[in-house]
Amino acid sequence: MSEEREKRLKLKVTQSNHLVEASYRLELIEKRVVLCLLSKVDPRKPLGKKLHLDANEYAELTGTPIKNAYRDLKEGFWGHSVLK
Image 1 (tube, helix red, strand yellow):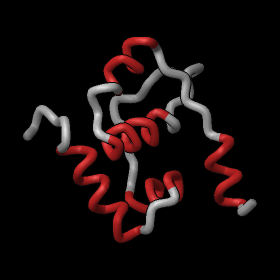
Image 2 (tube, rainbow, N blue to C red; image 1 turned 90 degrees about the vertical axis):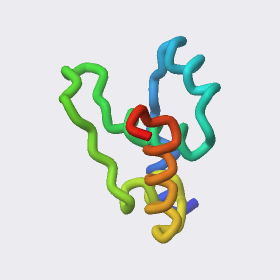
Image 3 (cartoon, helix red, strand yellow; image 1 turned 60 degrees about the vertical axis):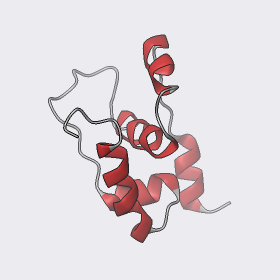
């Protein structure tokens, strides 16, 4: 197993029931973006005002080719955004 894949398999995200239920309304790419962002949150520390996820991080975490990562992030953000 590659080192990169092992790293991805070790990430854990804890979700409340509300988040799980809300995720049923998300498309696959939107769900991936949310889970990538949530993987950056340490539940033992206060949540900052912003979370940052760039295309390289997304590609590494999801195993997506970098050229698709930019597209996925755009779709994942604008897919359910109130800014549409």
